[in-house]
Amino acid sequence: MSEATIFDKIISKEIPATIIYEDDEVLAFNDINPQAPIHFLVIPKIQIRTANDITVEQAQLVGKLYVAAANIAKQMGFAESGYRCVMNCNNDGGQTVYHIHLHVLAGKAMGWPPYQDTLKSKG
Ligand code: 5GP
Image 1 (cartoon, rainbow, N blue to C red):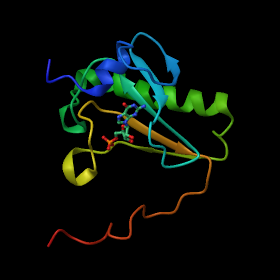
Image 2 (tube, helix red, strand yellow):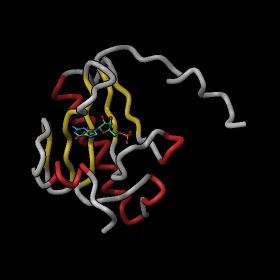
Image 3 (cartoon, rainbow, N blue to C red):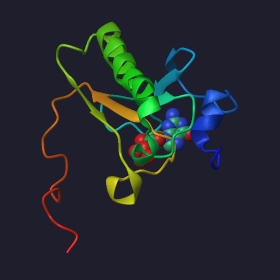
């Protein structure tokens, strides 16, 4: 396995997190630094470092992240009002933890594009 991340310690319960869903393959917990009134992360229990590393064999597992997000949204009552799912990839994508995770943000109307510099090239 690649270098362990903080998320491995959350999976193994070595460090605490507010867990909102768990099954054999998937874990969801509140983000420690929320960027919306509701902000949680949905992760696979196996480490996949970035979106670039997802294999065809892992496609169903990655799909389960979205299924878990939608089920949580329904249970928490914001599925109909809506939410945003984001997976950041590598440095320019803003990824800081190298274990793929779906950010699920909700509880307010969000603008698009998400950043003013979205349309700027790197030059
Ligand atoms: P990224 O920047 O990689 O897309 O997102 C990583 C996310 O993990 C950030 O939103 C950050 O707040 C969250 N995070 C980092 N460390 C911890 C932690 O120890 N506990 C929890 N619950 N979230 C964390």
